[in-house]
Length: 378
Image 1 (tube, rainbow, N blue to C red):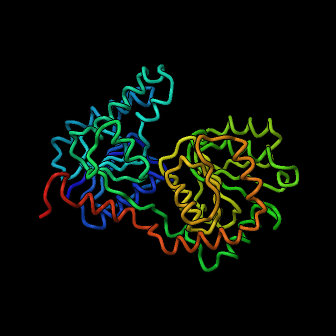
Image 2: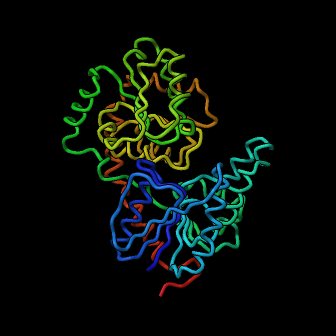
């Protein structure tokens, strides 16, 4: 098959980007020709005779303007390109398969002020969402978060048989290895952490959306003894300035570490004592299931699509919506020295062993290779 894969931006360490890469590699392994169209590409330099990556040059200072021009530039090329399938990893018109990594924009917009809904940015992104989910659109939707399906159906009357549920994806290197104790000891030693110190971990790009400020405030609210022996490490791309200023104002400048993207995320998962994933908005939260695979207890907000796995695994706590900072503060304090820590770890490992956490790309490629929506399989 000849495939066109569309992605606004590729960069290392992003959850969507990691899944895009795995799906691309699997398509190539199955013998397909793959053309990737993107606005920006950073960090992966693949060399494969069946893979072509094209950075589409468009003008515009604002992202939504560039996204619109990207779609306009691609429309005639995709129509004339003879592609068997057009697969989008962002909301765009004309897709045969959409990888649904983003939450329902319309649902969230209705909980914001009317001025936001009159903005050019909202109108453009809403038009893209309409193009993907409209009742008369004929495509498959790879659904990462089951909680989002009724929202899309409410706003767009999307047929339920267009949604194809995907299992979480966890890279094999995130699962707790046989030498877990040694890797934990070595990483903590490298970080200068004593045995009685607590390593709080956040993993994910976009500090603002992931709620890093919430985690910093919860750290500041700990009783003195707990606060003094706790360190927060944040792995992922983001704007460090606001978080550093907040940490400094709260007296935590030496305890909040913003490390940007890292290649040694597994060792941090093994070295940590608690994962924090307290996002303002999160369709899934890959870091949550990665923590479960690593045997790391988790404290997460209920708006994360994968928060349900923490509840099912009984490996931490889920902060119910609507979010209250004092609830997070109290939960963090309780979890840090809880006698349930060993039980949470054992429960996480047992859940990871019995739950399908590694085959999302295989599921996605089966849909891509299958009949188009509405066609009958041969």
